[in-house]
Amino acid sequence: MTFQRPELIGLIPAMLFVVSVAILGHWRRGVRLVDAYGGRQAAFRLIGRRVDLFPSLRLVSTFLGVALLGSVFSGIAPVQPEEAPVTPVDLLIAVDVSQSMTGNDIEPSRIAWAQRLVEDIIGAGVADRVGLSIFADWSYQLVPLTDDSDVVSFFSPWVVPSLISARDQGTSLGVLIEDVIEEWERRSRPDASPVVLVVSDGEAHDSQDMVITSTRSAVESGATIWTAGIGTVSGASLTLTGSTAPLLDGSGLPVVAGYDEELLRQIADVGRGAFHQIEDEASIRSLIADLRSVSGRTETIEEPASDPTVWLLLIGLALLVFEALLDAGLTTRRAP
Image (cartoon, rainbow, N blue to C red):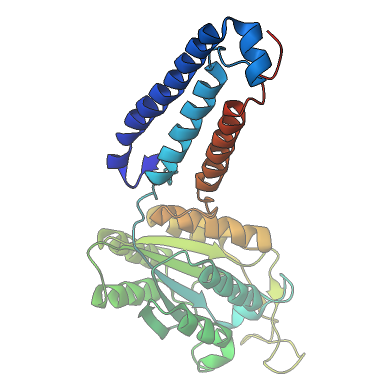
C-alpha cells in the first residue's frame, strides 16, 4: 500500500492519544462517581448502567476506527504492479504471392491462410510499427513501416497472386530479404528491434546458398528473420487463374505446388528467429505469442489492484458508531 498524503499519517498517533485520554478520563469520572454514590449497587440504581467498567471495547473500537479513517484521509492506495520494460519492435511482414501459394492442400488455400495470418498479427498489436510487402520473383512494398495498423489492415486483402504480373511468378527469397532490410535501414530507429516475418511455402527459385547469405547479411544489420510455413509435403496441383483447368509446365505435365519446410527452418535458424508451421488458428496464436516475447509484451492484462478506500471508510465509521453505542451504555446495562 502507498499513501498519497503521507504527511497526514503522523496525525493518527496524536488523534489516538487525544481520544484515549478522553475515554480514560470519562472512565475515571465514572469510578469516582461510583465511590461518591456509596458503591456499585447504589450507583447502578441511580444511573441505570455500570460506569466503572474499564472501557477496553471502547478503546479498541476507537483505535481501529481512527486508524482506518486516518489511512483513508492519508490517501491510502494499492501498489500497482510495475509494467515490464517493452522493447520497440519494427515488424516487416513479407508474403509470398507466387502461383504456388494458390495451392489448396490447406483449405481453403495457402494464400487465404497467409491473409488470415497477417490480419491476426495486425489485430494482436505485437509491434510498434508494421510494414507489409509481397514477393514472387521480385518484392513489392505495399505499406512502408508505419505505426498506423489500420493502413496495413486495409491492404491485407490485397495479398493475392493476381496483384503481380503474370510474368513474375518465381519465388526469390534471397532478393526479398535484401529488399526488406534495405526498407528497414531507410526507416530504422536506434532503439527498435527489427523483425522480418517471411510467410511462404519455401519453394524458392534462387539457390539455397544465396538465400542463406542474404539471411546472414540481415542478421549482421541487426535484424532477426522469422518464417511462417504454409503448405504440406504432398503439395497441391495448380490450376489456371479463373479456371479449373490444370496448370501445365513446358513439358505438358501438371504443375504441383511444393513445400520446402527445411529451407524455411534453416532461414529462421540462421536468422536467429523462429519457424512456425501455419495450419490452423492455434498455430497462428502460437506465432503471435512468440512475437510478443520479442518486445516483452504479454497477452494477459493484469487487473489493477482493488482500491480499499470505500471499505476502510465504511468499517472505520461502523467502529466509531459502535464506540458511541458503548458510550451510551449498550453493553453496560447490567446489575453489578
